[in-house]
Image (tube, rainbow, N blue to C red):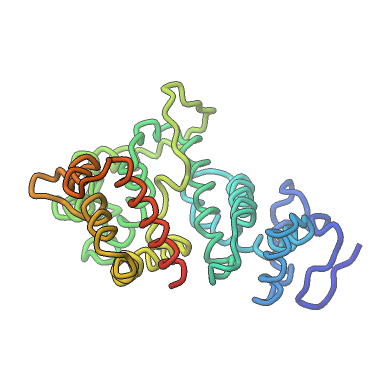
Length: 306
């Protein structure tokens, strides 16, 4: 089976082009030769996968981004784990990204997939580093994955060589703690563990029942493309969009919505209850609820039209 010389991936079984991870150099060489999809080809494949579940389209999307996984995996070689395993976990994240990718969001798959690839690699590292048993909170996990790079940056900026010191200075401890929003004691403890070079691997299971999905504690969610678009749309709706939707209501409906959903008193108790509004307008609480439901539907229609 051969591969087209054009930029399109047209093979029926695209995975046959990629050797197994048993030969890492051959694998990396192979994925670096795979052609990239153009924006139009990517969009067409993503729509075909989303609308009809076409597996060949999914294969095209995955194959064209395997080199991205290899590139990202190199960022985590300092943790003492095999690059082949990092790539394998990153590929799982890539496939998850392809499955969830929505071409209508207006971003390229490469931007969306980076988040999921890093998520799976982080998850793998946390499962296999014995010392990470201490990193049980989101802040500690963030500290674990950022302290090494921050130390490297501070080393380059410092006038003396940090490699000759066993720990961070007081000023550097304060800087890391403030930047990552953790306690100085947590920075000091993690610095001690990282400096100890404990890279032994062992199978690890969560016996305490606590579990975290990757999107809950990894990269800054505010930079994830889908989150950015959602935030922009939410800000627009929360401002002018809500105001225009309220203006489409009659005075009674508008007041009911404002009292029930938009008003906060000084004691943070919220606005009026259904029964209080019912007494004021001389109707039943159920009638106030019906007016509220109808008003919310009308507002939703107005917001959707925007």
